[in-house]
Length: 235
Image 1 (cartoon, rainbow, N blue to C red):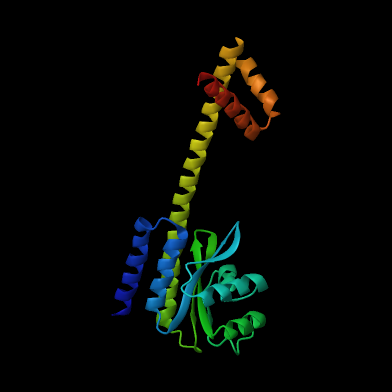
Image 2: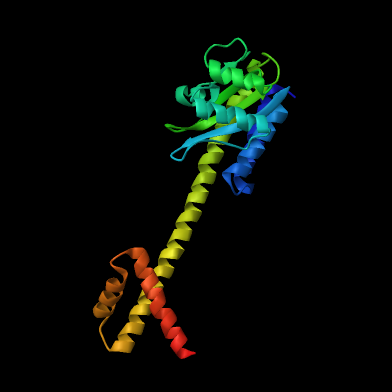
């Protein structure tokens, strides 16, 4: 397949993931598998994600990829971290002779990984991580491979951005539902106290706050206890 057509297929397939995958991990697993199919003689692929939670690997196609990546995070050195920091493609033709990350390189070779290439995931002014592919032999990464990796990384960055936004929206929706439920139970508890003691709304709320010590979480617990007590009395 001509290079332009092949890259179009890669782009279309990865873009399609936006409509079908529900989690970042599942989507990036498909991106890594696609990269593994596209780059000849690839031994493994995966995505490094860098965010406020730290550094982690997602969508790895082989346990060796996970281990090699974990060593990068542990030793704080390696091509994926360099790709993220420099926001540039990083290629290593032979880890046995490359001197940039000696501790990590020696460990990766012990895992049977001899060469690798990493492309940054960049969205706007944010570096989200890096997409990487490993090989068991030295060298062999062509300009074609670099273009495929770079394109896939750009699509993966878009995917991470969209899916993360979707998950953030879902979490916000869950938080809203919990907040509404908490508000409703407090309102119900106030109504119970008002009816039981013949008091006003502000006094009822003051009673709940007194029981909770002013803590929001404990306020919900105090309100729940009042409501549960009222339900038991009706039985």
